Image (cartoon, helix red, strand yellow):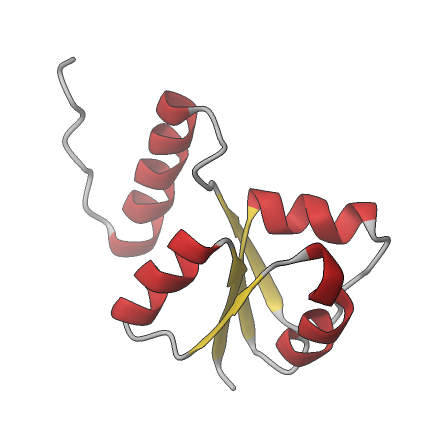
Length: 100
């Protein structure tokens, strides 16, 4: 598996629509099993909430390149700024900021 996502239901749905087929919902009761599955990925995209869940469970994931992204529980403007910076550094295009 090349790219995997570990996050909340909204993130999983969005990334599946974008073509990431190995997407897993982070739930406290199944975090151990899911962590084992995502260790096989080369790149792991993980939401802040899922990352915090792994830290609380004291689970480490070695192997894949890990990219932590904001989720819906994050501060909106700060998250948007981080996403814009990630997009610009990856794709090379600066996103237009909302004037509101």
